[in-house]
Length: 251
Image 1 (cartoon, rainbow, N blue to C red):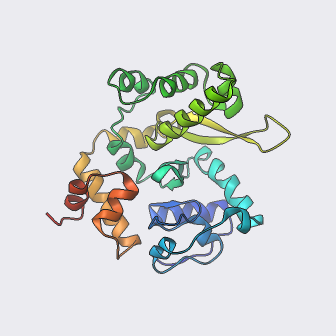
Image 2 (cartoon, rainbow, N blue to C red):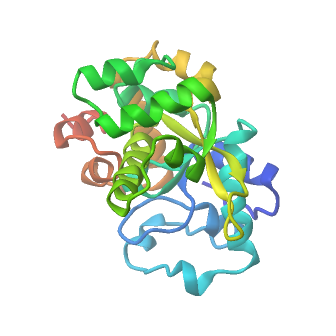
Image 3 (cartoon, rainbow, N blue to C red):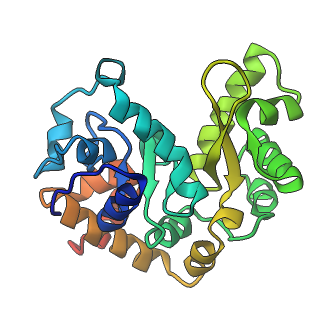
């Protein structure tokens, strides 16, 4: 992948589209490019460098990092990229053209009401279902607004709320959808159901087989990280070892 210097949200969207999928910031141990590196003009020739280097966001925080933090919520609101904690529960960005592949592999059904069926099948927690139902009934909501609407005010309930948010993002059921000033501190993330935010990508997911979706992701991943092995893909994307080997066409 050719390096490019990213200075605007439009350039960021172009970078994500060219990459297909990436991390927001580098994560030690995860072989995947990051938008942060592109903003800094430090896109490594081999993203496996992130396996060795430790990235300290607090130490690296500057105007560029603040800009990235804002973009992660604005990109999906403009339908330029999916943003959520997908890969290993870390802030991730997925181009719309690859969203159908990941959505298909998550085992979702592609409707706004899918959380009900997933819950009946034991695939999501009661908290995750309740959170989806709240957004389904009342539309996009900010973090505190959503938690208060569910009546989860105690520290223990707040921990359950955070786990449900991560669970739903890792399944790509919800997506960042802008921000809202709820306190005098940081603005809160607004969440939307993915089928409502990216209906075209969700419909396209229903036309893919799991094998085709995994093959497309694997091909792109090997383009991004030529030295990647099936074990890297299995760890990053949550695939079984056998599925990763088949996607890499080693079986």
